[in-house]
Length: 515
Image (cartoon, rainbow, N blue to C red; front, side, top):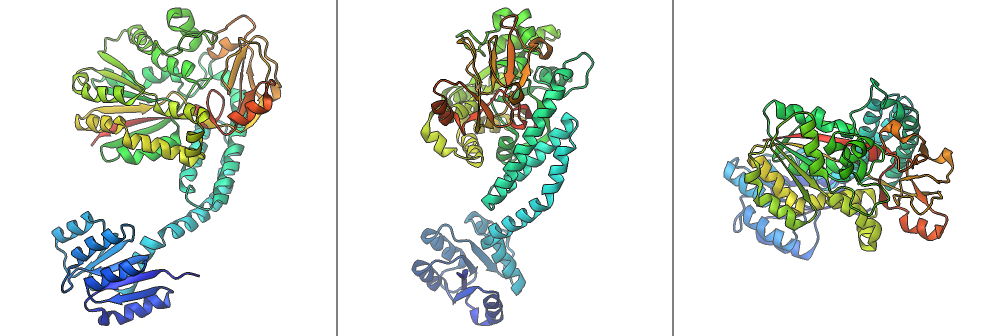
């Protein structure tokens, strides 16, 4: 077994013999030098896992040595040891990206702790995390079996997301174990939705907050109380994706509230996002505002009237809010939004829709390169985080924080990585979505889908009198018999939405307060 190698530079290294012997007894290899020049020479000749550096040495100081070491090896963690507690010295050391800062006299256990924190941290965290998940495995299983309400399922999903992120860098077997548990959760959740979803739409029935209730229940009360709001919608955005970008906004915003709501079915932009902005279910939009509703079989864009629908909702509730609406599809429109921001601050409500995550999801289906870049759930999250970090949206949030603007951040639906194909037959008017189908001549196995033969009961429009909607659950997707094998291989392991799963239906709504 390879020993971790330590470099210790101190002009009084002879006085630290007890510390050296202690570390060697713990299984570490320690190389000792008594000045900065020798430390630099040692770094040039061999690799060290960690370096302990005395600040006050003759010749090159510890800070000077640190700078030169970083030029040779920018990755190795360096721990500064000093007698001085001067704030300026600490600030300089932190600015040069030291791994730790210790004040003399140091005892062997302090040194050992610093080593474990910097070079054994990953292994320790990984081992501890796996032990914790093993202990939680049965509890999560019980939660899945004992979930009788949508609130129960929201708690299950939060736990699964928590462990997905914690296990991301551990043994792949543990992640696979969690995936099996998530599959079990989704299978049980599909049964729950089949049993309860239609009933939620009955008059007076208890139900989760749905897409069409979002503005009325969360946005309008804030506006009525005199607050100015930026309502930001990230299309196709999941709870796990929010959790990985949360740290990127934490420096500018406090998370006042983090809740979950249920996207309506189909969990697709045409239905769920139009419901958000209209405050109506899709069949109500079709009846009340036919000019703003585009049927499945029409070629026209399905989300081109969102601003108009928002206006109708504000008017229907007899409000007179000043508002703006912006849809951001590229960097140019994002930069223009940022440059116009000061002008928008006078509005009571500003709505901004960012389409990047949805475009990423679809691009991954169509582009082999992006499939490779987002081959796993973790990689998919990482791409989302990278976009947030390096796009105009990060400046957008910084500007909002600077101008002390409250933000409601949400989405219209999530997405799921599909794996299992289900055969379905439809006529040429059947829609192309892989997670739901609507038509009058659908042929399928009813045991494999969530079927809705009376769409009006769940607020969906009828294309004709015999229209049926079917929804795929868990990680299933619909495939036609024609060119079946090609179709399946092309869409397997792609991210899709529109169906029934925790990832698609249970989505975040976050309230952010500027610091």
